[in-house]
Amino acid sequence: MKVSVLVPVYNGELHLAECLDSILAQNFRDLEILIADDGSSDDSPGIIQSYAARDARIRWWRNSPNLGMVRNFDACIREARGEYIKFVLQDDKLFSASAIQRMAEALDNHSSAVLVGSRQHITGAKTKPLIFSKKSRMYNGKEMVVACLEQNSNLIGQPTLTMFRKSAYKQPLDSRFIGHLDFALWFQLLEHGDFFYLTDALGTWRVHEDQQTAKFEKNGASNHEHLLFVEAYYARPWLQEMATDRMLFAQIYYLRKHYGADADHLTTAMMSQLSPRRYAWQWLKHKISHPMQKLARKFHRE
Image (tube, rainbow, N blue to C red; front, side):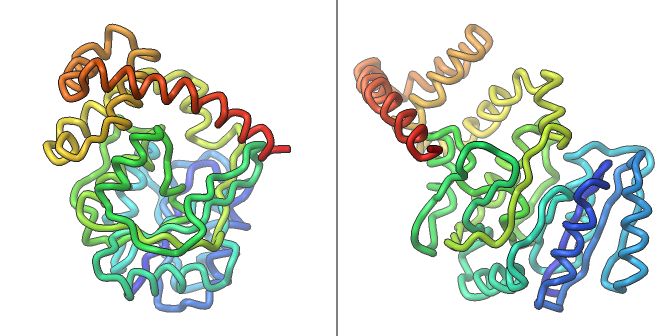
């Protein structure tokens, strides 16, 4: 089995059929489709059952009790038999019939790559998606981690826009990181290999108020998640060694602004790597560039 397509589901009836249709339309045939329903109270199980009756490649189950989003993701990966893992989330869909083939070929042709991503596309959001690069190419994995922390931004994209090697998934996801689930998965993978980027938009990530991450953030449950996440990763010796002035400043500035004294232990450790003079220089560059970036985004939206 080359590819395992994973669809974790929880109350996803609104867009689930469109999601599954986009998977079944793929021209790549050497795949299995695993669907894990996490105790949905809507008609998701009925929709899944009707699709499973149509295509023998679909294997599905219903978690009891409910595992929660992070543990359901992990359960899907554990059940996968494919060499490559391809998530397609319940609200999303693949655009191109060759999306899975294109990503699998990228991993086949680049042995150092553990993760492949495609151009970001968002449905239902007012802001324009990030265009990471105008050229398909390879990026060093650990340098990508540093770049994400420099910008406090998910440069890789959402799970539906990616594919990765199962062999690079070394340990279960940390259930504390719900809002940072994407970051946690990408960072784990990129510690062990490189990132290959494809310039075409092969799928879309749908944004709406009822999606699981939006409800999580609305309930305020993620108050200290970024602090805990950065603390966990900054403890890695390789990240401390590779940390740039820009990365250190971005995290110190953000942590102080959002967590105050709760982040003192972490910002103090980071400041020991970044002298006051170098911090002041980064602060000055931030104050100059930030208004320009906001203006550029305004014109880009218009």
